[in-house]
Length: 162
Image 1 (cartoon, rainbow, N blue to C red):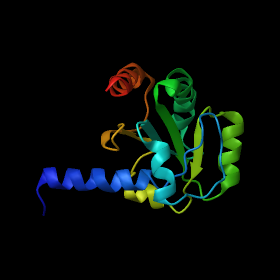
Image 2: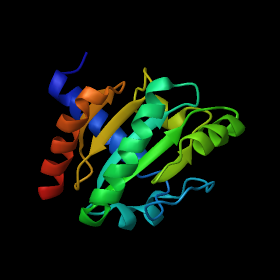
Image 3: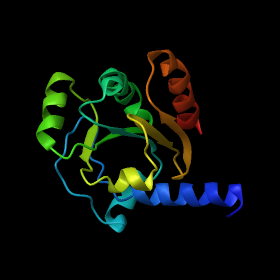
């Protein structure tokens, strides 16, 4: 077994690489695009704070988190925040129905095979990963409760000021 600090660094490294395999479009866009190569994506992430959210259509707390994440993207996108929600449904029509009922004001990606979810160790819905401007995973949140919104927003603001 490796040292806890080394393990944490390894997890952060793998997480940063996984993030860099997802295609990020401008805010408020929805995508059906496939992931792009790391060398094509790297310039688009430089200097961004990324809120990476894993969700599924059947997830009740996900329905609560989407309006909040949309508001975060609207408020702080110009300051460098990028919200990306990765859907894990195997049937994309379920995700489409969810998005019709609960529109997203941020980037949507799809991971029906759970490749990125596995790399990030997702075990609950939703799971959010916060990545700083240098690509380091700074926070991980399992689940979503409205009572946590203010604290999470303050944490994002601190990262945006770094």
